[in-house]
Length: 275
Ligand SMILES: NC(=O)C1=CN([C@@H]2O[C@H](COP(=O)(O)OP(=O)(O)OC[C@H]3O[C@@H](n4cnc5c(N)ncnc54)[C@H](O)[C@@H]3O)[C@@H](O)[C@H]2O)[C@@H](O)CC1
Ligand SMILES: Nc1ncnc2c1ncn2[C@@H]1O[C@H](COP(=O)(O)OP(=O)(O)O)[C@@H](O)[C@H]1O
Image (cartoon, rainbow, N blue to C red):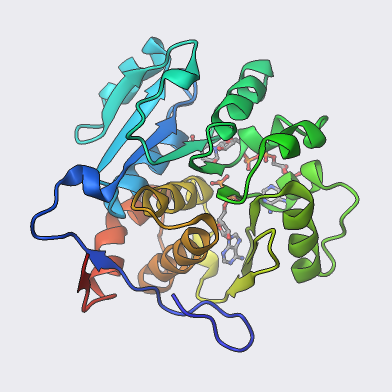
């Protein structure tokens, strides 16, 4: 990934798997499932994470939710969550929580425990909204390898006093306050890190604005992170790739189709270096 003098994100590079490597070398992403009848969003995230190159992807959730997930996925693994989220396998390299997760106390507790593990992580959707009344509690648990991916409504819930009239300023202030990377979604998504780095993705199309699109973005970030890419860079690369899918596809794009387009988008990033 490159940035020009205006901090506009350029085409990312991908690293090909090593000839002697195995799937664990490409990382292991865990995506948290929503409850029964709300499992689709996390499934989109998990499918995107796998397609973008994570070596393994697990959907973790309650047994009833996994029974629903199991009717739809094959390569993605399913794991029943235990009450103690500290017990997640130490080989897991990235986490994603939020898409259709529910916004109750369980969500807040889970986010805080997971954020405290120091892993690369994406916090999206309900996992943002759940902290609307207590953003400071969330911020105390965050670190600079966590990416928050709010749309404007979610941003206003966490940062009600930060005006979105100047989006670059708003995202910079939010990253500094939260201690995490902020990816503010929109026609031109803006990404800022707590250390002051900032980037803008202009490679996009309005066809990206469709239900579940943000859930796919969350999965792309998590899948890139799984492979060892840090939070800011993973967010920038993912925003470009997500936009590229829509630029190529145009009319009729749906979130399900976005996942299927990921290999085509990656194929055009070559020639890949061997990792
Ligand atoms: N296939 C699925 O299962 C899908 C599940 N989804 C889940 O549905 C839940 C609700 O997500 P939503 O984002 O729809 O709703 P939110 O709960 O975030 O609230 C939507 C409201 O936020 C405000 N808002 C302000 N700016 C906005 C913007 N740029 N985009 C959207 N809303 C904006 C509007 O008042 C809007 O009515 C999340 O858990 C999400 O993950 C959605 O991602 C859609 C697809
Ligand atoms: N007008 C637009 N042009 C380009 N991209 C857009 C536009 N509006 C929204 N997007 C993108 O579409 C995605 C919508 O995500 P989100 O609001 O989380 O939807 P959902 O909750 O349905 O998944 C984001 O990646 C955002 O950047």
